[in-house]
Length: 373
Image (cartoon, rainbow, N blue to C red; front, top):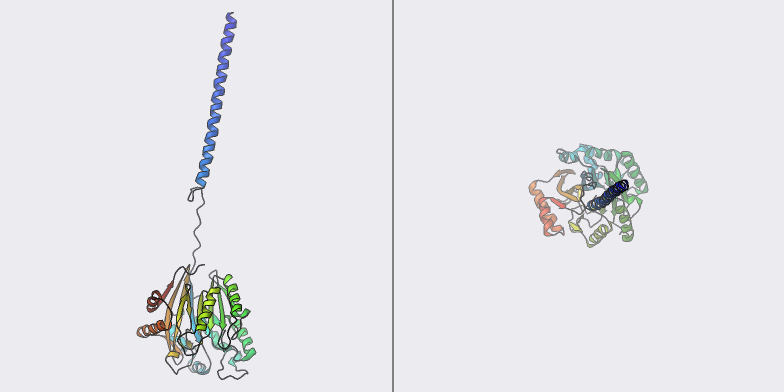
């Protein structure tokens, strides 16, 4: 009996111990499960936070280098200018500007090349009253001043006929210049070119509307397509009424249509004098920069012109207005008094609001957040 009682006691102790162990194990498993769920929930919650320490912070955007550009109006190297070059050398035309750092540190330097670049500067049929031909030798030497792009869309590209147009393109290719523009009134593949500058695609298009109006539907399509494939689109326009400082309604309508189609900057020429400017939808329109290098010595207005020094960086465009004067085709900076007087006249010729009038007076226009890479 004593033995049986002892066995029962041992069995009760054993069962109790097993029960305690099972309860402990079950409790541990429940605790572990709850801890795991809460941990995962916490991780999920942290992962949804915008600045979580578990998130990979965005890398800093690649710094963009400013693109520096210089634009001029009409350059003509024949007739009396050609005589000056033969007598005094081509450097005479630029030596006063080049005395400083005027042409230095520019990525693109552009002008309207007012004539054909033909072999030996020869004149071909047809004979025109105003007939311009430039030798590749003269044009090639412009490289030493940083010129690297020419607008060809003007009424003088065809002065030496189809042969002259062909030789112009061949000679500029051989000399290593970029260019764009077809003869007056035409819109075709030759109207635009895309160049890469500091890993950015810059489109430069040129159109001439002197004798023929441009097909606006075709123009809008061409500009829109070019704008969609570039980071910045600059349009050279050869247009307007000669010797008139006020731009015409047709010029304005065409300029607005160009910007509506995707143009970012419009640079005009042809009138042989400076015309005013506008800012449309945050984009600048310079209707005419006037004669840069020419031989129209008969008036002060035809020997005044405007250069544009542009700096494009990030979303901002800085435009420095540089009034120039010439004497016997030699270009020079205006004095401070001459500059102030010129800019006052430029404001009268322009259609700009008060915020831009003060900037023009200061010689610098800032267009912020209107451009982006």
